[in-house]
Length: 318
Image 1 (tube, helix red, strand yellow):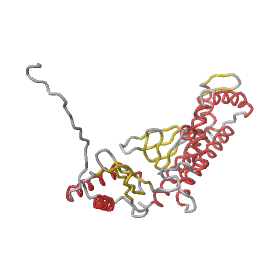
Image 2 (cartoon, one colour; image 1 turned 30 degrees about the vertical axis):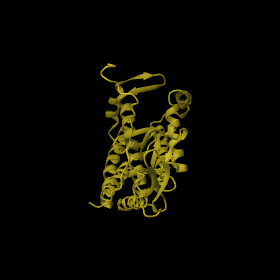
Image 3 (cartoon, rainbow, N blue to C red; image 1 turned 180 degrees about the vertical axis):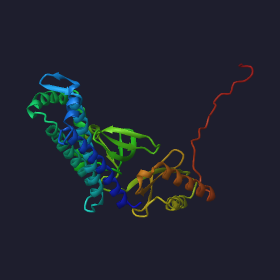
């Protein structure tokens, strides 16, 4: 089944469901001739609560209305997702931001349509709005803070799905940006959910913000009595043989220090796919360097300590 056919089936399936729900709502509203006795019977089972009456009929209308609006929201969000995904003029971040803004707008419209369909007096919401404001000020402050932080992250495009970021000791690529948290998947397959506010207030290292190229440093130590020119050539040869290392920018090998037991080099190379890991590239290059050094008699020094004994105890002294 093609993507177009799958989209048509998606719309038809949900339209059939919402049609059934609308028919039920019309039936429960008394618009169908001959339904009055049934509705009157359902209205008998209930009780008075303040100025409102809760009955089997009113609850049924509420359930059908909420279900119909939920299905309508799903249909609209699904269509928007499919349409926005096909727009070529938007990057992935702008597409995700568009979907979230449209989703919030659709939910708001559905809410007021439900209020109107159920015949609820909007003036009764004044008390509710006051209580809702207190809830936001206390219990839901973090929730709404994370929601707006996520929208800001998408608008300024500082963090996008697919970016490789470092937050604290967490290194991974951004899987998705949700309304509450950002999903960061590490190389171990672990998925960390970092609150959006943390990414707004903490220092974040984004390896692919404006350029996906990342430079790696590999320290190598070579013995003083080895051929240093040949050692540098072998290090460059090992780096060029690594498939993920870029040719441009070029790899360089610098002497950074004359150590106690050998000359210390720093290999500086570039990769363009940090989401695939950096430790495996370093391991690949070091393995190649080790093999080439062994084949060309280039020695890697190791710390040595000489022990000088000034006086050796004799048997008589013991």
